[in-house]
Image (tube, rainbow, N blue to C red; front, top):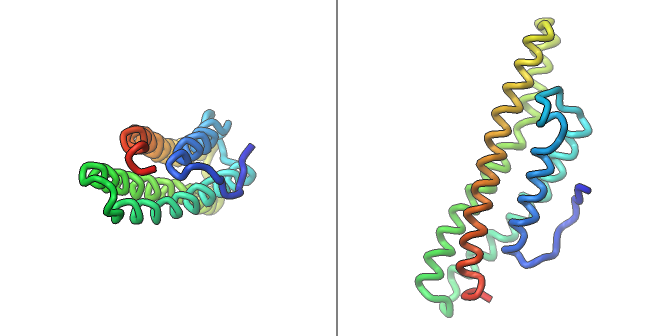
Length: 158
């Protein structure tokens, strides 16, 4: 279900794949129920994030190539530059999401050190998941914007 291999598709179509992968993270039971995130779920998230960032990094080079292609109209280059900014924002937000494991580790240390009661522990996990759900929303929003631009420029750059 969660492939870690490089995906060989039209580079701009890769945004659809990233969207599917991020939704799969959003749909993990711990995210739905605001419960302790298992180490298995953290591994799944890490694999997805690493795969997405690696492949999105390849697309960054494609943007530079297309932006500097003299055969592409000025209008299309302008749109590609806007897409590159969104693309960079997407990578940044996915990378921010990866801090979830650090947040969990730091909070586990605090939980054990201070021997918190279950109510406080539940709040700690609710807080971590809520903050990272917001990052997921930003990622999905950015992908939607990028997909609109992809539709606008796809015939101009092929």
